[in-house]
Image (cartoon, rainbow, N blue to C red):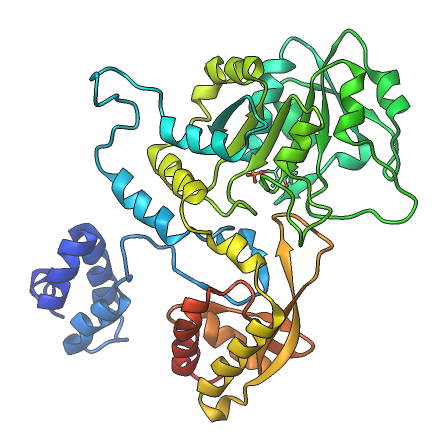
Amino acid sequence: MPRTDQVLADPRLREAAARLGPALVKRVVVAAQERCRAGELAPTDVADEAVAALPAGATTLRRVVNATGVLVHTNLGRAPLSAAAVEALRTAAGPTDVELDLVTARRGRRGRGTLEALAAEVPDAEAVHVVNNGAAALALVTRVLARDGGSVVIARGELVEIGDGFRIPELMESVGARLREVGTTNRVRLEDYAAAVDDDTAFVLKVHPSNFAVRGFTSSVPVADLVTLGPPVVADIGSGLLRPHPRLPDEPDAATALRGGADLVTASGDKLLGGPQCGLLLGRSALVERLRRDPFARALRVDKLTLAALEATLTGPVPPVPAALARDVAGLRARAEAVAAALPEHLGAVVVDSEAAVGGGGAPEVVLPSAAVSLPPAYAEPLRAGDPPVVGRLERGRLLLDLFAVDPDEDVVLVDAVGRAPGPA
Ligand SMILES: *Cc1c(COP(=O)(O)O)cnc(C)c1O
């Protein structure tokens, strides 16, 4: 059994200790020694085993190729950041002037450049603010406007569960709001809202059903009609589209909601906007200022990394999510043909038509015509265990590697990872 300091003297492990930290490397070595003690490993193999077990980086998060055909995939971290946003993260990682005016040496408005970039992208908003995520934006609005026993009027068809058991009505009640539900699951009229609005109404909330659709005998009330009721109208548009998108005609956007008269719009930054996790608050300056100044706002504050990545998302080259939405099926098919042709013949890869989706980020009914490389289903597990892991979609008894959510620059990574994957067990 080799001693710990002997194993740690291996040059590969010394290099790893400098890169990943000595504590992490030592844990890996001790684990290999334990396997040796249990008779599972020869003493001469302990160092090699430890090297093989080292993580690639100082985070256990793995970079993954998203070949699911789901563009905004919650389990895969939603929007991948643009190269410009990643570069901005590097810049912001060190000491930075996030809250210092370098000319006067006085405290500056936190994240000023980011807020100006956001305001420039949403000219219909008098003021803007950024918090930790979409749920935080809604929680802040609710806490500040409905704190003193005020009620929030909301349609029954808009009581949305976001995912993983989180429900918007429960979130709002958790910060002290009373909900006044109006209408039925499928239909609500302006008169229903009008009958519920009274002196205790803090605001009227319109929530976009971003992950489901109710079809058939339905009706809902647009923001432009809700504003005639009197109380402030808050529109939770969900996906973070700042203006209408031709490919997503039913997806609400911030500009339309604000032009319709919404007093506040809330949205996520890491869905269709394609930025880092954050929550956008857009609307009337008196309201935004009240939210920003509330003590609770501090608990929802975003860090400098988020501010940097959001600014680069707004001002830099088109980020991956909106870039993907511009893809046409002919281009996707050509890429799929090239990927299939580059894979080893024994895999039996064939190109098939596929249907991609926006995902949890919005547009639940939109079908995005796409193309996929189809493999035998037994490859699903080895590909997820590969380096980098490739996550596809099991459909019609096949493993589909859908290219819609894969950046074209990543096709070579995909080919390499699939080509190196061990065969099915
Ligand atoms: C996604 C979503 C939220 C929650 O936003 P997070 O950024 O996930 O906190 C709230 N409302 C709607 C309509 C959504 O689609």
